Length: 300
Length: 330
Image (cartoon, rainbow over all chains, first blue to last red; front, side):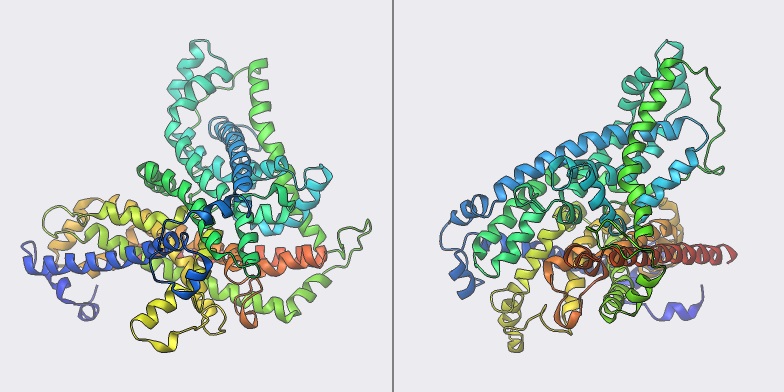
């Protein structure tokens, strides 16, 4: 562009690049140093709250209020026991595993079936279905929440875990279909033709040939759906109000708001650690795959 | 759902020439299509499409939920909602969120992503910064933590007396920060809330932008450097335009999140904050429906929320289209 725009942002490290292909090592070093500084700063902003939470989870409520900074004096696990049993984090954890597990299996099966048909068969109405899915991805769940309440009530599924599962499946479906649509679309036609020539029917072609070929896409969607459903908050809050069926996110919210009266902040911090640890462990194990998925999902 | 995907419409432009013959409708094929399409669609229609449509209908009635009669009242719910000062306050807060949140998150994410990818030596191949994997893994952490837990954690951090924030501030000598209620003061409640959401998402979008930047051919950066473009200019003039579609996707998703924001508000300030300064439309909708039992009014709020969401997405697409057009002319 023009010279006027050049004048403004010329900083010392910036000049290093303008010396042409040779560059100046001092400028390079300075720029790398500044970059590291900024990134380290942000990493601290991310990590410090987590470390503080972990530290505080070992303290008694008294210690938390008298000295928020001090290291815990001993490895006190009472908070964890209280959180798991008294606060009901344990049962909520099991509910969540059950609901998210079933919903994931169902949505992966149904989503890949639907995406496959939409991507590889041409029939009247395909475009309509596709746009109906797009709408489901764009419209806020809040619009549907009131009628959904009564739909579930009419089916006798309100405040039940199966009701929660089917709602999770329905609302995770559009994303799953979109993501897998492009995967199935990209698979070469020759393969399904070869399978057909070999005498495989549509069912066998799908389960034995096409599904295994979309494995990368399936894993990515699975990870995103897991995170999305595990963290889901609005749907259970509105549609699952029976305390015995609470999922983890709900239980945490209830615990936090109740902690204001019957102050057991130590157990609250312990509950946060219990909730965060499994996802962090899963994340650290799968972080390469997950970060790969982020780019796959958006570069289509 | 917080994940990101760019839809690929099966329009005439993107569909490769269909070379499948129309085969006979055998039992195998018919049963296959029925089950594969019918089952997912049935669930989708009953639990997603139909509730959306019903909501639009209920928004035109005076339905209170548990009565069997519902009278058609035309647009009365809408005039009521749009003249309700509390709902308008919530709408204003949502609009502040939608203006600030995507911008701050994306600018920060882009800056960090640029530092990571082009922060290394400027000679030869464009190289990333040393240790960039470490920064990437750490920044991504918050994205996997449940939003409600992020909210609870930060409400403790912001706590006036036992929170670490005021502890740090008084520690470095800012004594006026002692027992300052970050979430209880009208001036700071919203900025403090926005920071929490930004904290949760910067890492995710940073990883997304890093992946996009790595997809740009190295020759382009090389050429820019030979032409004497500095790092900042390369980032602003070359990188950002080339990953424009990723930025657009990020903008739409952050905007939709900002128009929802329910989880964060519920965790940080369940009551709407001091003088309703963090109240959002979704909170108002839920309490109108499930506390007051005014389902017709709540549905009208839902429609207003949906319309604002669609207008926002449309605007982002339009602006992106216009900017792209300007680039091409140049």
